[in-house]
Image (tube, rainbow, N blue to C red; front, side, top):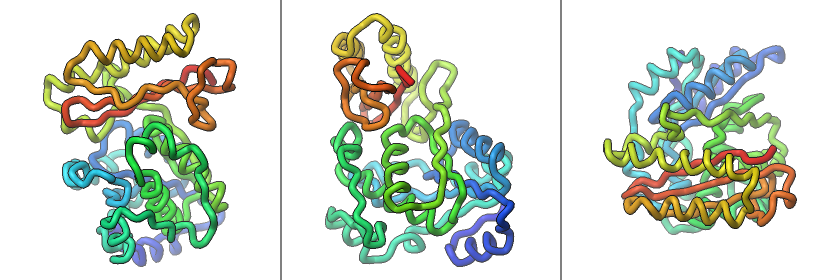
Length: 296
């Protein structure tokens, strides 16, 4: 595996090995890697000839600066894990390699920077107004900003993202369509711990006791999936809220059953061809998200 920290050197290398017959796959990450990330690399290896991973803790998608400073950084371990997984190229830039001073100043002033659209009108409609978008203002603009930069830098044929960030996937797919970027977005299944907890870099911040408590989130989702065959959406939501209410260390940010295409809440399963249950919980100081597909 070859490590690059600059755009110029990365693109120089990619240009030297890129051929029409070779498919380039990109796995964008923020580091603190785990088996979920490994599954993305493995999915890319199954379909692509050249695998590029990126590690970049993107400042523009954090609306809470404490969250940014607390984000775990494990670069040495990440490099070893990527190498063992068969990644060919790692792009790990510094902040000033990815963002100009002007772009960072806009973020500091909490102003939305749309320069990443290159003058194209991009409108996510209601996709970024619900769930994570409602609780984390500016988050998805930052996501679209950095992912569009990575796509333009690497020029991948395919890019791999985990289902755990279900809303993020919808935003990225919409961005790709609106900017007419020639990349196929691949969603990979959630990888879970033996007790069901969705693997996440944020899990590193949980204490031993909090880690045990966190498994309640997936247990609720799995029960919701089971109950969805016989219960109404209103009953399912009441069940989820009551279950979270039994754990004093947990605070429910939201539980929604949404149309999997539009992300808009539904009140009856007949209102959508596909439906997903999405949850966000704050456990002490750590915010965790998860989801389960109910209808596809």
